[in-house]
Length: 380
Image (cartoon, rainbow, N blue to C red; front, side):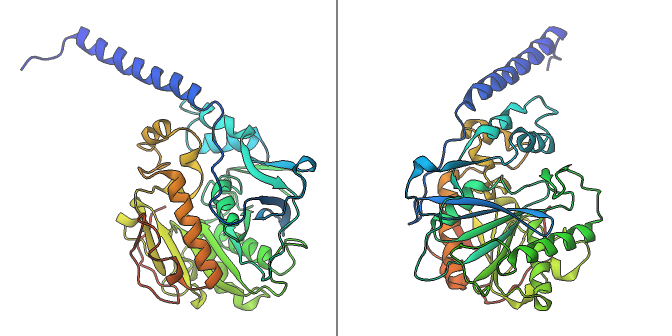
């Protein structure tokens, strides 16, 4: 066996550098005119967005919209604060440090596919309301395409942007900016702040007038992605002493271990005793995460529960998923459609069984029951 010569090593380094340079150059071109707006898969073909505050937190609400004259309406931004939002996300996932911030910079001007302040539809029955908590380092924007899909299936989704320091970027009520500051509060204080902000948004009337939801709070669900999971669980437990009526929980990759030592935020078979439906990615499934009725998203990664897999072509996002779990091997559009359709079926009925059996990308993992149950396993 011969040892490599210095020239062999130099050639290897140059080859790797050339490959990295080619990927970067190709990726820079590939994100032009990205992300492409996903087609809506539900019966409602227009979605509106409105902004409000619940307590100190901003809320971005998605809802099925009537659209009498699109010429008089403005498209809502994908990133509410433009480059401030996209730069915050780029720094959080390390793209800025790697010289890859361009992979998210284009999101500042991306199409949302939602109409700002459009008049809501007026169905015969009130629609379910989902109050949603983002993950650690998330924000109210980065799951907009999934929230838009849920709205197309007849769900009003209020995405809360938390002020506990774990949002990648937010703008506070006094107009000041708060960048990602994960040490601003202790873990227990973060979870409690998040739960309180969810409940503030869930109070009847908190989101303003005119939305096609029940005026007395019936049909209100709490939900969250990753770190938003324990926040929703705690909020459900605290709701008994509030004017909020929680009909159930919808969770995506709930990070049950990030509970701040608060039992109600860990799941533990409680969650307020309400129907709970959870979806878990490939990595969370391998870790044994279960909470209520649990569905494994086959070929889905953690980032498939936000819009990460859609921010650039798959040939760009899939290699990056070796570093961050942005995009699993399944088609991201098909996966979003399955998650939205089955999640909306649960929210409409309040029965986790309504979400079963309709997609080859979803496999039942947890016990089918009407109340929350979970394992103690978790990923962050």
